[in-house]
Length: 171
Image (cartoon, rainbow, N blue to C red; front, top):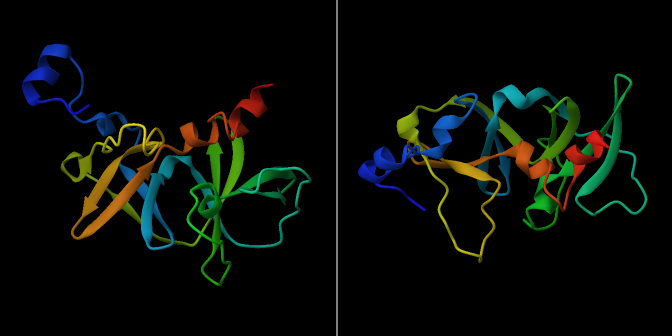
C-alpha cells in the first residue's frame, strides 16, 4: 500500500520502504531482457560459469553444487527460479557468489553489467499486484535514466519456504 506524505508522517512509517536498505550500491545483473539489482554488500565474488555437480532429487532451479576453495556452495539458476524461459549458458553467463547470513550461495545469471549507486530519489516501492504476482522478494524499483532496475531482496528469496536454502543452514 502506498502511503501519502501526511499518512506516513502520522503513522511513523517510511514513505519509501527501500530507504531501509543497508546499502544504496547495487550489483546489476541481467536475466533475459530485464535488469535486476542486489545489494553489493551481499556479493562475495563473481565467477565465470563452470562445471557444476548435480544433486539427485534437487529442485530444477538448484543446478547443483561447486567446491569453492573447500566450501561446498549450492548454485541456484535465477532464470529457472523466476520462470524466465530456457536457461542458455554462454560466454557472458556468470555465477555471483553471495554471502547471506554466513552462508555462501551462488546464483547463475545471464550477465553482470555494473555497480550502481542509487539515491533515494531513484528508488521506488515495488508495485502491488494483489495476489496475481508475488512481489514479496522485490524491495523496490530503481530508475537510472531510461533504465528500470528490479531490486531483489536476495536474502528473503533464498530463505523462502520453496527454497529454504538459508533455513537449512540453521538446522
